[in-house]
Image (cartoon, rainbow, N blue to C red; front, top):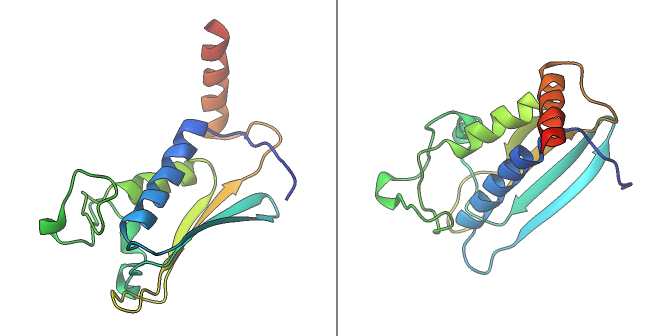
Length: 153
């Protein structure tokens, strides 16, 4: 894959990748594997984060991106970010979806199902639009304001 720059908010994209990676670590037991990959598609880069963890039940595959959609038990709630199966409020993936969609991309998950014995795993796709110029939508204003702010520093 060739190096191609894109116009984006790097801090927000970092937040998305960090959240998805934390989830992969959180739902993959010791000895499991997490793989990060990417492929170039027309106008996008598809970044994949695949784990060998407990997977996601089919009925939850879309719900995990809804606000307050934590699929873990309340008793497992932890303020630690990577406690195995530690629960949170269920905001991270909803925020990640909002960030990616604001950039003109998409995020989704695939999993053969949930099974704590067989560990079917999950794959998250993060589609990042590749642009060689600022977008002509709401993001254009963001980039213009950011450039003006940086110029003042």
